[in-house]
Length: 161
Image (cartoon, rainbow, N blue to C red; front, top):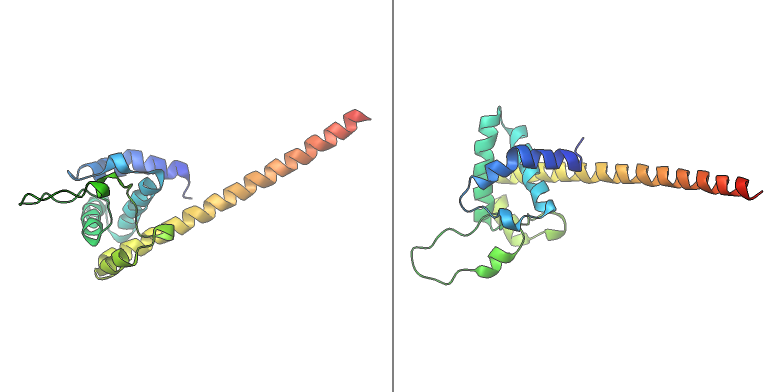
């Protein structure tokens, strides 16, 4: 089951350290959604590889490939010539081209790399699973709250008599 606790645990125990190994990381610009996306990328790498070491190398490779495809997951590479930096990109939160942040240009660049496209598909499956489980938990919580409310209303009615 993929819960917020699982995502946070994976982020804190493995993914954050792996992501921050890259000297161009943008940890300061990560949102909870982007942390979840990176955790899902790591799980996709685990699904696609034989062992944890291979998954870690695949994760590092995938982060670089996503950055090359236009996902703002890493700071731009240093330029040899003096050129104004793209400061606006550095202030934008990290987003992956999925869901509401769909970006056709970036999607096209990712689609040209079959391994990267497969990892993005796996990330999307993990995201759908997370959303479905979150919805089910929210529905269960709402149902429990409604049941509790009915019991309270029944108790109030009994006490008024």
